[in-house]
Image (cartoon, rainbow, N blue to C red; front, side, top):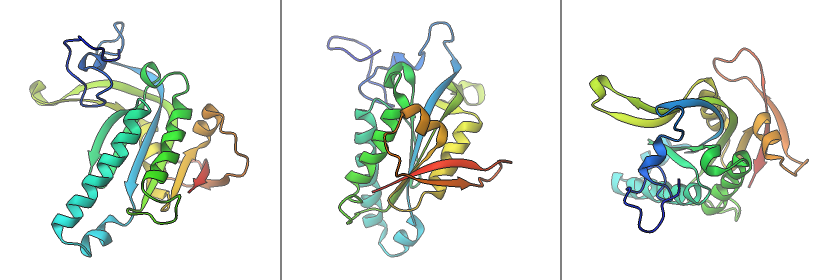
Length: 212
């Protein structure tokens, strides 16, 4: 549920537009459930080389600016921020919160990410690539040893697909699976079509590539 004025529940760390109670996103499956959703991964291309050519403080400032810009875009599209890992931000577009058009909103977020990082103007202040995939995954809360640590995340093969699409996206590209393209009803027949061999997958994955 959305956070309303007067609600006593705390804002969710995954998206401040929602409350902490959202983690049990269904009363029927309070711990989690297998659902169809859209997953987006955005990462900085060539971050190792960038870090080598900057001092640690400047690189930290750059990454914080990247995190802030990406989170602002994703929060506005009602995504759950899954993780900030190294040079990457991962987000979950869950239909109960992003709506039935979760795939479309993820694609919109991907385009916006290229815009806010300067790729559309041809002057990116940080080079990023985006991967988006729609499919079934288990979404819910997971606990560490003896319940001492917990997190809200998505698990499954389709999560891995989304991550690998981001890894093959070049600077200034949004690489979306055909599943996302169809679900989002993207009205653009000029997108480049590629068939990719992804690590761990026995069959080629058909994707559409949107460029800045």
